[in-house]
Length: 548
Ligand code: F6P
Image (cartoon, rainbow, N blue to C red):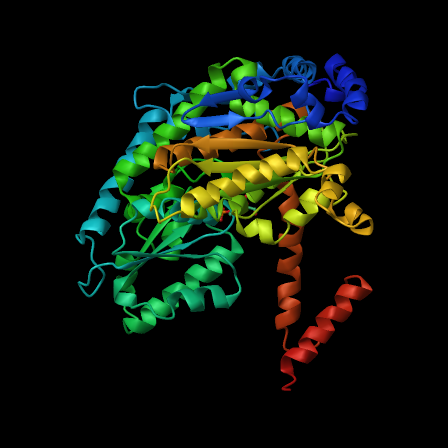
């Protein structure tokens, strides 16, 4: 489908940003702060309980003005409206993109093909809540009448990363009588280690797969079922008590042997990586309870409302999305580090890897034209302070520009002595050190010998955002996830790409299906790959059968 949309490089703001960037390349954050005393108070914004300080970015009012102009020229506002309205903006799959409907209040109306989808969404939420309550109270029992103590989510990609991230993030609110495990990798070790000490009679599997065809998930689900049946002497009736499914594909769920009564549905207009607040969040709801889950949805909704209505210069996802465009397209940055100073968010960077890179890792526009500018940057990170003792060296003194997002909370969920102040001192110190560095003069003034001075100089001028919230609650997690969902949308809207398909994962999947029988063939197969792949296949077949 042709949209005829202008490429971003043809917008006048893009051209202005290019020439503006030439002057900004040599402007240091030290100068920006010394000539603009209020910068630290002025370049801030807040929404849905999140406070954003973006003053330590290499931007002036002129830069931000040009970025907002770029957003306007790219039709960002109209594109946001089209998404919220339910237009089929995922053109390559002819689908609406309505993860925002998942957290819309009960009395909203959102039409897909003329049908209001909100009542159905709330119907599924109610079904999830009733099931979650039954598991949490012990009313839902295993086949032998034992109470469920372990919940194992089997899924991969969006059907794993969202649930595991949310469980870890909200563990403080979770029922500690229940154990939660997440199996994703087709490497048998993942399932074997997860089930090693579990009692099958006390274990509930949630098979989470939008399509219910994903090789990894179906292989794990099948092996989990075998594990259960071995414990129950092959009694098929046990499956109904120990397996439930989350999927859009009722037919496949039923042919796997799961009663569709125990299936929690969602819809093709929810992308996998945008699904943690759909039924894919069933494990989250069992862990934290329906009330907390609804609170999380409320946080998502607050950020949605903000994104849809706030002025560009007050709009957190717009500001952060545009800043990432500024670094990616005008200052040659290739990566963005996300650094939560909150250990409960330890899986947040992994979650964001899929959200950001599966969405905007694209090389053609919606019209199928190859882009002549960079798109999705590499997102990665680790919780502070661990990252500081690992890769921060490269951010401080390496040759690459790596903008950072620091995420921190004013209150610890479990205060322990001085830990939280120490943690906070570190996050504040890192953004200060990155921005302002330490000059050769300052290093020399410390008595450093001349030969060592260059090694100890911190150039500074490394940009960062700091996101600060009161404490990590379900609502704040919802707001934080929605913030990044909308940053991704903002980027995609400017680049003119489709953040909602993922054709790039298909080729590898198809080739694996072709190679698998070649590995399993009892006789030496005729191979038709390149010489490297052919010989690796032969070598694997030989090595597999050689005992050393
Ligand atoms: O890796 C591709 C992908 O389609 C992801 O987008 C998705 O989150 C994941 O596979 C799992 O898909 P499903 O939920 O259908 O098993």
